[in-house]
Image (cartoon, rainbow, N blue to C red):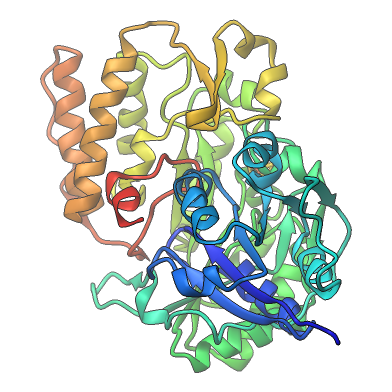
Length: 464
Ligand code: SF4
């Protein structure tokens, strides 16, 4: 007699979004006849009873924060069920495979892994128990419409906060996965190796539409870079805008692509794009070169100008702390934020982000970085590295503590920046000049702006 599996799909964290990959896996695994339970630990308790009865428990590890949280919860899952097959899948599963296997994980899947996960479930009980399996899938998988019915309602996830301050329900989808670029510090690169895959346009739109039916008024396209396939992206947003002219959205596009495809930018504004997240990373050309970002400070400046003329909001992200950071360069960084009129556009968490070097990171092969790298720290799931100026470590800790306090208190970006501005000037023994008065002008953003490379906060850890 065929025995269908009991499967629990767990997301520990997905940047405040209803987890797309869990919904996609739920649809695919559900087609095998398995009984699927989705368990999103960002909004729910650990589903202990379902885990106790599960044949297979799969955790999605798309980013560092999610993986650090998974490390906390894995022993509890194993305690609840000694015989279940535990699968970890996603970019950070592959990068942390030795650690995960040593922590009792049976199967590690990477790349386009949801179909492989479903195939594993479809094979019913022929799941390896004694031998760890690690497989990377870099071919276009059979995308289907994500099944979101087992996840919490959108009201429990990150909202859009428009300039009028009245929150709107937001959905999330992906129109492409992977990336064709090779930025040295990026965790997508060691896994996807320059490949990206387009999700069928009709499926992307159907997924958006099912979230509109759930109440979404805004959609985040979570593609690593929406202009990896610019024609595909433009077709998606033009169709979306035609069918649902009142729905707004946001996308992530690298500086290089914003310049290269500048003729497409007016279409973003015309079709309801409220803001474009872009990985500026640094204003220092030397650091941009080491990270192989494909842009310079001058390029970023040009993008700011183009977007300003088009009234298109930019939300830049940064790697604020690198081995080359000093108290002075950090102050220069804040001055550039003021110079480019970005005070209200940069989520507070960005001021505390440090270069993350997980296993497999291309940074490890960079000559400029080699002299700073230390040993691998299993507890932090990353390599230690040193500052050129050792005193910066204590400064980084102070900034990190301040940022976490600002985020937990819900301090608006401009107010948090003002606090940091004064603090960093004081550290440099300088008088802080008055900030421009228009800096507090609110811009659209999401209610949760935590970042994929961040360490989990105390609140995130204690919730588990
Ligand atoms: S940082 Fe962005 S553009 Fe660069 S490789 Fe990663 S996803 Fe691609």
